Length: 294
Image (cartoon, rainbow, N blue to C red; front, side):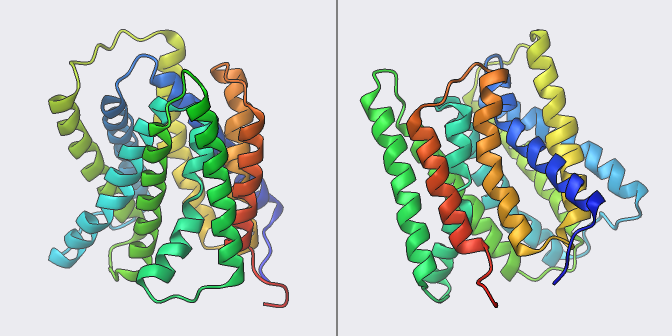
């Protein structure tokens, strides 16, 4: 069984913290930015940074032929427009910790969609995962409906985003392409940034850029950390990451999102949030952790 070095484990811990903290940092940005303007700005700048980095590493970035451009366009729809577009609207409606919990139901939706549409086998573990996810959604939905200031539509946005991410994950596995993964990510981000920029121009008011210092810092975090350093770290770890370690990292992200949101944006979680985190962690463990002896 492949094990990680101490350096890789530290990198994975840092990556998990980066992605968990990103949720309240995005929420902070949305205090002064409109959702689509935020996505277009951070994604475009992050894409340029990644393009320069991968170019210095000798990665082939330019797609060759229609088949590679076709893969970019197909995979960008669920992975960029679906996940990044819908999730930012969900985050606008919900607390950042709650949005993170719902977004990371993605691994369960990936397996469920595989069973429903790609003839993958239904297992007892998947049934447990599905029940756990429904329990998490039910807890949060009941809390939003019972709160005078609640916004249950945010739950719909986040589940739509998670399903898009799951579909994008399945398509990425099933769609053959000769384009390097690094180049695929860069061009999908370029497509997503361009499309969301056009939509922002049509659907949102003109954006002012006289932000407060905290919002500028959150934007810098989004560009340099979320779309920059975190992506580079992930590429360095992806091939060496055992499934069980990957599952533990994914399970920790919503919890980090909840805890860091208290400090960054002053959100105090309810008992339903912690209960929902437990349900989602159980669901992720059921679908991602390998069976004993397997």
